[in-house]
Amino acid sequence: FIGKTLIKWEPGQSGTLPVDRFAFTDGWAVNSAGVQIVANAATLGAPGEEAAAYLGREAVHLYRFTPVYNRSYNVTTSGPGYLNYAAAWADGSGTLMTATSSSYTSPAFVANKTVDIIIMVDRGDRDGAAYTLRYNEAP
Image 1 (cartoon, rainbow, N blue to C red):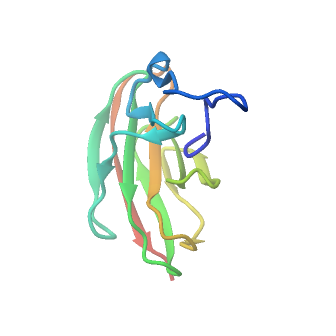
Image 2: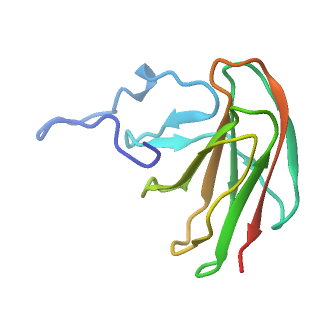
C-alpha cells in the first residue's frame, strides 16, 4: 500500500484529514494527503555494500536505495530460514519481488522509475536472528 491513499474526504467535504487516527509501527506513516508513506527507512550504500542487522521477533526492517534510471539490479539476502522480504517502488506503483528463503538473490529488474526502491525484511512470528542484505547492479 505504499503510495496509496488510505483516507480521503467525500466530495464536498474539506478540512484537515484525520490522519492522526492511523497508528503504525516499524516506519510506516500516513502523510497529510492521506497517503501511506515510509517514514523511516535505512539508506543502503553503494551497490554491493552489505547491511547487517539483527531482526527481532515480529519486527520489520525497512531499507531504501536510489536506483540509476534504466539500470538493472537484484537484491540478495542471507540469514536464517524463513527470512521474508519484499521490495517495491517508494511511490507504491507495484511489488518487484518477494522471497522466503535463508539465502536468496532476486531476479534482475530494470529501474524504470526515478523514485527510491523500498525493501522490507521480516521473520514473522519466528525468533529473532541476524541477517545480511545488499543490492547489486545486475548484468
